[in-house]
Each structure stands twice: as C-alpha cells, then as structure tokens.
Length: 147
Image 1 (cartoon, one colour):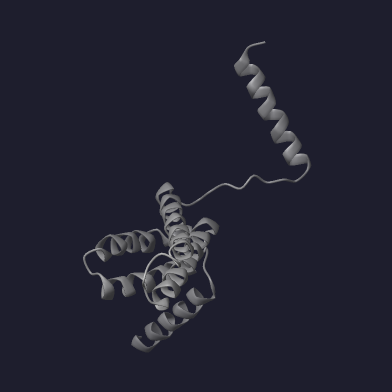
Image 2: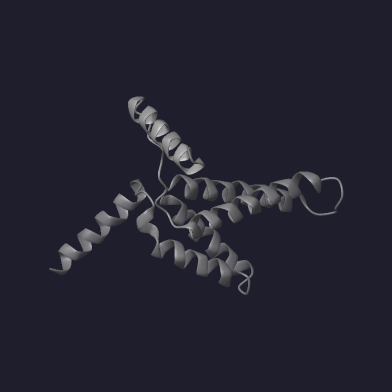
C-alpha cells in the first residue's frame, strides 16, 4: 500500500468517526488578512500590557501613562478576540481606537485607517451583533421617511 493511499484511508476514517460522533470541524470564512490583523493586534495588546508591568519601577512617568497602556492593551486583546471569533462589534471598537489615534498621532493613524477600511469592506465575513441590528433599524427608518 502506498503512503498516499494510507493517508486517504486515514482521512476517510477520521471523517467517518467525526460524522458518527456528530463532530463538526469548524471552517473559517474570514480572509487570511483578517486573521493576520487579529494576530498583530493581539501581539500589540500583549506588548502594551507587558510594558506596563515591566516599566513600573524603571521610568519616571506618571501613573496615567501606565493606566492608559494597560487599557489600550486590554482593548487590543478584545479586538483580536472578536476578530478571531468573527464578531462584527470589533469593527466599531477598532474605529474608536482609530479615532483616538487620529487625534494623538495623525501620521501613524493612516495605517490604522487603512486597516479599518479593509475591515469595513470585509464585514460580511463577521457575524452581526445587536449594535448592527440597531444601526440597520435606523437606516430603514430613514429610508421609509424618504419614500
């Protein structure tokens, strides 16, 4: 028996056992770029949290900087979690972060804005949330008024 035949037989057995046990292997719908954005966002959030806890005794910076770093780290981790889970509310949270970044550092925020545009363009791959239902109802009311 050839190695490829053994592999195919093994895949058939795994598929049969999974079907018999009613296990469904999740299939990803979102593009690879969304996963990469989630990975970099998670890495950024973890680095912000890490720097918060390692710099406490070394620098002469006010406590508000540490609190802001920790808050942004938690927000970045929440965005990464939402992107991995395929939740659309992460786009709104990311938009808030982009707006704050535009006010703080407009040159750097161009990259964040491009990523936000990409996420909005590919929002169909993310699950709708209660916020989306609210915005859609407002949009429908405005369209009814125009007619």
